[in-house]
Length: 145
Image (cartoon, rainbow, N blue to C red; front, side, top):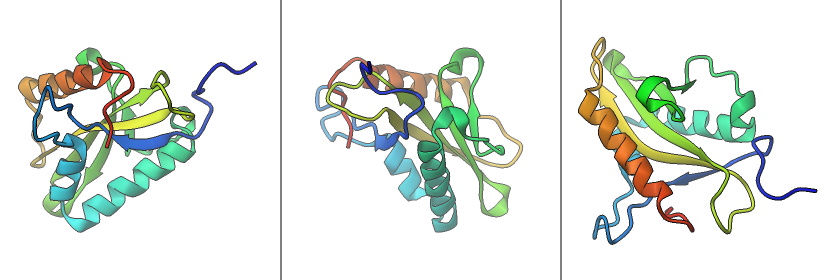
């Protein structure tokens, strides 16, 4: 007997939308980042998201484009795209199997960052992404848009 979404199911791709109590403008950090990137990078990132969501994620052979994160980012996944000028683009994602009212599990795009070649994102960048993830998880039904 099935009780809810399974990690074996195809996932729906959704974007975390900030709640009015946390951000009156209700920004969508992952979508906002993605829309600011070059067209070729956006196309590749969207193709990776679709491939991962339909695989489903645990069966997707990442090829360097979809990676489970480690350390303080354990539980997070990263879409990794290299763009023009060897600039790096990252989408930070969570997998959600507990979202109320959803029939499928969710691949949630929480935030995005980009960085020059051979540089690292700062600890503050990662901390901000984790805070956005906590904000997403604290409400159920989820705030998505």
